[in-house]
Image 1: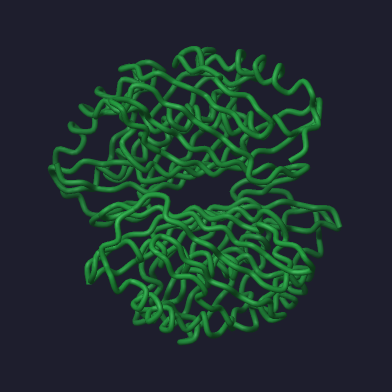
Image 2: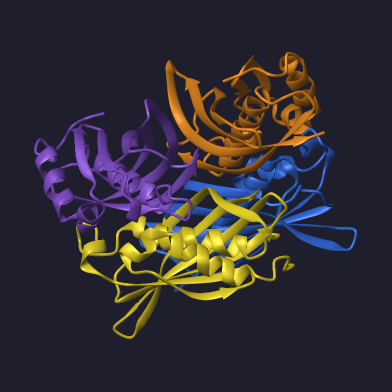
Length: 142
Length: 142
Length: 142
Length: 142
């Protein structure tokens, strides 16, 4: 994996700050490395599905943003990233005090980048893999 | 498609009211029929990704809940529904004043139900298909 | 959906003839229309999984080729099509005398095309939907 | 990951021998371990798509069987395994002399097992990841 945009980290931080949904749900960008992004989200009772667990759509929200920025981190300067598609397997109930989505680039291409993201729940001394995403991101020129 | 739970509509309304994320984002349950559910979400600027469009995770949030309830509507009494997995294709930027996720059961089985959901954006005289989901739901006994 | 390549049908027939796997399994191209392709496959006992049903990979083989050509049919002249990704739900055992994969374009874009394909099994007076695919195809210039 | 069926390896070999499609394409079962299966396939010119590369459906065929048996290896005695769904990303043209699908269980559950499979192409001194699958398998009692 080749780094082509030396200011990727600053640009990702700036873009993340524009994702207003992240502020609404309380998500934070906690790791920004070439090809690897982590987004962390504390549990809140207003992010839940009917059993009180984190809603699968919110699990997806942090996994998708982490995946998009993981792809972006390896793109050339003056790129934009969009999600083409993703698939998520929900492995266990998303029960925990803290959630983190860790996305890693599987294959970085000129147009398309394939990314895998794992979402972990921590709490009560446990750290469980609760979901895994496999997705495709597209690079557009600004 | 066979209806086995005569009180499915009341139970879906009750369950939806417990999905606290729906109140947070402002989503409403607008159609509840056997095998078909619609959830509607007005655009708000705090639900956006970096370009101001509805975040793909929020598109997924309403599509997943609609899919789960579409599956539930055909399950026997005393069931619970959980999302096993879903795949979403983002077809166009999710740009509009109002979004609706319409989910329909493709195949209802004893354990697993396969559901398709389309998400439409309306605004400025247009109605565009912005995303399509294909997902699998599981029926658990309470 | 706009037709841009008037000789799409001849080119799809020519390309299909080069897909040597189609001859090996006995598949035929049975409908070639703008945005819609059908591939038909008679059952043979050497295409089976452990219970004697058509193997999910062969179900996928005809669905993927049908999807690729459905996408190609709407591409401009001098294009090549490649599969980016697909997701398949296996809805019922692929049991029948004849199988047909019917692919239809959901969204045709300059670079990416999203296609849905349904695979039907016929036999003993029945026609069952046994699988459904949602996939993404990319257009490359020759 | 817990091993519950001590004769899993013999049963997988027996089942593989019944998958007639494996003999047709020339695939072999080359690793059978708890939660990990490898299937190997030498390239043949009659397994190709229009450019002469291995057809994505055949890539899927070996990845799906490897995934099913990886799931089966951790199931209790007297189980049957069926594919519920899978998603495949095609990362590079499937060009090589030899292909291997390596499947590993991500999460083994009572009813559903989630499996990841990577398909590698080797040839001319290279070994490339050409596809990755994320799929769901179901355990049925015989």
